[in-house]
Length: 454
Image (cartoon, rainbow, N blue to C red):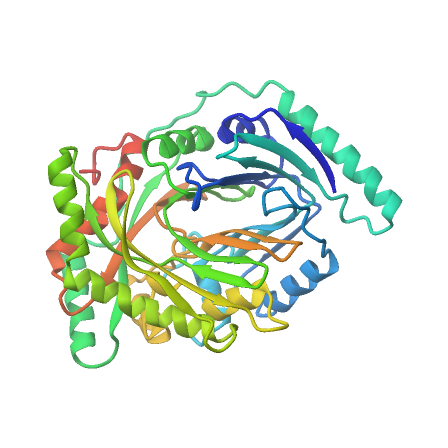
């Protein structure tokens, strides 16, 4: 590993300096936090790519093989992502793991898997305000050749970071003309349908979303929009991907899976309330969420589901819940967040954890497979990136992935934003519709949109 310590800066400035490189993958702790948002990573110009649709059902073995082929030990004292596979796992990839119906519409046809294999990572410690270029020398195998490549690639990235970035603000940033796949009445009827399915004993909970879409002009400034989004809605698991045929700008507050050594963690979010500018009202709103039997029930169901998922790959008795329904506050909403942890069994790896738990229970429901069947039936459209995962699987065995929510996805001249919530028997259809708008509000604000942004 060739390590170059560089001057620390706003990671978004460094990502912009590298935005001309192919397959830009920016994993951004835009809401810096010592525990959840400590590190940010930029990777670009991969030495190989892994892409596919859900029909390519051997992606798990392919990914395990390529990570094992390039396995490297962790360099101590540095941020955890030190080279590896990074990018997108779309929601539809779940059909490669379970027998599920195809959605009625998949007009944008996002790839279900889009990963770069990155030999160089620019890493930021937001707490200590330090930054490094970490260059592995991969895919070279012979030690001397690997060392030469590591030095050359590290120095090349250092020079690229120092080049003047292209001027900003040349393209369009605002989008209007948003439409939804649901009317208010239609969404409320769908919520009522889910409640009827629960009362009939079909499921316990399902996550139902509505899909907003607008046309994006050819000159749309995707990275400029992301800068605006991370400013109005900073999030600990934010991300920006420019993978040539699609772009994703995510302000996700939710960690899906983290693996360091043999320790696994997932942090499901269930339970949401909008925030108030008035401090007293905001405090009361947070307290009301903590005391909500309906929201706690949603959260506890998903915690039980995730305990079962992690138990597939973890040592018996090691799966624990150190935090249940804790209140966490973000720019526009309060959330109830739980933490489920476990210790991996011998021989299990990060990819095995991903396969055991994907897609996340917090954005599907319980039982997971039946909930996903109902979601496909009622939503109609493929979710694509929404409710999938973005993050990294390191050559050193580490993994950190978000849940793709609070996200704008661009492909084929269109932009899609989705927002949803968990439906249980105590759900009120009108309130559930309003919750989707609460969750999407800051994204529409970043677009400068007035329609559907109230």
